[in-house]
Structures are given as structure tokens and as C-alpha cells.
Length: 486
Image (cartoon, rainbow, N blue to C red; front, side):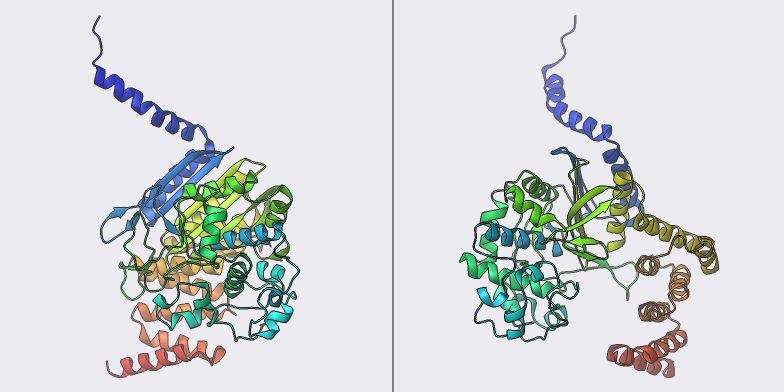
């Protein structure tokens, strides 16, 4: 009898765990379907990112696609660190709840009780911690001010305060929901005041280390950093060319967003929440239970929660230029899903809705998304009128989504398919006649396709609705000069 060589036997033994892992992935219907869908999206739709699926506390799928660095052809890997954008709010909410549990904070207390010298008295005297956590404070956002200044100036919580500290409240605190990054920066300041630590040190010591999230941190992007995904967006002015988000991103994350993490670390965070490693049972329930209704469910304390066909799902999304992410935790089904992407948002929408449909079945929101994709495909294949007819035939039972059509119109421009792009822009204008955004994007479509006369006409119509938009007024004047000089 021939004895097999030693090396092949060792190779088989070494390969066995990987083979077992692959078999586990293929056995799970969600993992198998997701893997097939992502492979198709990477090939056809520029999907770039990483997706993890865990079931009953065990990772059954964790794969990466696309590029962390396009210029250097460095591919994403499962341990690549992605920008989390607003997913940081989960950590800020958790930090607040830990201080509540320790008896050092009260959700019902006002800002002024912890920051007695806070100069905006309308905020200090009337806004509560609960309202900051649930985006019902009346505070707004700081992106417009931030965009005008050098990004390297913003590395601490205090650096951000000057962007909004003197702004008046937009509405009476507690009267309605309005997403507020400024409110979460202020929560970070309160955490620092109460704990005696910086927000960065607090979340590292009390959240990341206990949850074994060793790859999660608020990285400083002016450092040379390994295993970091750069975010990419499609250039509108130069079809087919990608732009990185380095100059539009924050240089260092903080209480409102912008830290970096991996799919596995976010799974560890979800597991730590579910197994009460970070909060007691009672306070975990307070942390994740929805309190204020908004368009995607209910907002809790740094967590968003929804019910899909009887299944409670909680977590958070995060998005910015070249960033689109989501953490989904569904305890009764036993699943945790992490989606981290470093490209345009339409690929995140696609895989998020695909996974939700596979897990929970159809819902009105999911059906609306996939109906919109069908309308887009019909319009691309047969023109705008065919797209309108498809919407009409639904008899109002399904509605198309303006934002999804808009993104795919710009995608057609990127792919140098101008006629398809204009059909989609015109479709949006027909479907949403009262939308200033649809009108503006139609003007942009004509401009980018070189039809200056149509672009000017549409921008003038837009300005009749939005007369205070100086940027579009200047753009229209510039186009008029170009047309004269032709």
C-alpha cells in the first residue's frame, strides 16, 4: 500500500478549518444568497466594502469586496477599517447610559446641570439629556460651517463647539424630531465633564476594550495608517473618474460620527450589547427601546429600532460622502448583520434591502425600493414614457423613490450613458413635480450633458421656486456667458 506524502496530509489538516467555515457559510441560506448577490454587485455595480453575517453568536459570513485604495489597487479585506460616520452615536449613547447606570447622569436633567457655564442659555436651561439623545432638542447641524474651515482644526470635542454654540434652537425642545449632529457633540462634552475623561478615552476604556473592539478608534487621518478604506464618490464633472473623500471627511471622528472600525468589531459590539457586558439588563432595554417616531422607525438612545414583519431590529446607519453603513441586530431571529461600504450610497441601499427581504420578507418600504429599481431598469431599457407607464400601472399601490432614481441617473452619467441619465432625470421631474431637488438635478443633467440652453431654462425655473439659492444663480449666469461666447 502506498503511503501518502506527509506534506499533502498537513495541507489537508490546515485547510480543514477553512473548509468547515466555508461549508457553514454555504449551509446558511442568507449567507449563500448574500454572497451570490455581493459577487454580482462587485462585478456590475462597483460594490466596494465588507459585509458580515452572524447567527446565534457565531460569524457565518465575513467577506470584503472592491478597493480600500483605488489608486494603489489595494483591495478591501475583512479586517479593513471603514469610516463609521454616524454609527458613532451608538457609542455616545452607550457612554451616556453607563453614566446613568452609575448614578452620575440623569436623562431628565438639563444641559446646564452638567455644563453650568454653557453660554447658550436657551440650550442650557431647557434642553434635556433625553432630548439630545433622541434628536428632539431643537439643535441643528454644523456641516455648513465645518466645510468652510480647515479640517485639521477639529480634533477634540471642544473644537466643534464653536461651530454651533451660539446658534438659536430651531424649535421648542421636545416638540418634534430633527436629526442633530450638534446635539451629539454636546453629549460628548457632557460625558467629558461628568467622567473626567476625554470622550475618546472614555469610549475606549469603557466600551471598546470590554467588548474587545481592538480595531475601533477615532483615527487621525493626517497620520499614515494601515488597513484603512478611503471613501470614493463618482465625479460629476469628469465621467468615469472617482474622487476620494479625504477633503470632505472629518479629520478625526468624535461623539457624532467618523471613527473607524471593522465588521468583526461591530459584531463584537452587538454581542456585548446582547450579552449585557456593557450595561445591565434594565439599562440595555432603556438604551435600545424606541422613544421617538421618525421616518425609519423609532429612535432610542443612540440606537434606531424598527419592527419588520414582527421582528424587532435595532442598530444604526451611517453615511457621508463615500460612506454608507449599517448595523442590524435581530435578537429573535438570532442574526447580526454588518454592512460597511466605501463607495456611493446606492450599493448600500441595494444590499441592505436585499438582506432585509431575505431575512424578514417583504415590507412596504422594501417593496417600494425594489419597485423603484424596476422602474429605473424599465426606463433605461425603453425610455422615460415606459418608466411612467410602469408607475401608472401600479395604481398607487407602489410608489417610486425620488432619491433612488436620482442616484441612478448620476450613475448613468458616470458610465457615459447620457441619454439614459436624462431619461431618469426627466422621469423624476414628472413623478415629483413639486420637488425643487428633482428640478435642480434635471438642470444639472442637461449641464453635464452639454445642453446649455436646456440647463439654463431649467435653472431659471428652479430659481423661480428657490430665489435665495445664490450658488445656482451664479451657475446660471456662468452658463449664460458660456452660451454667448460659443
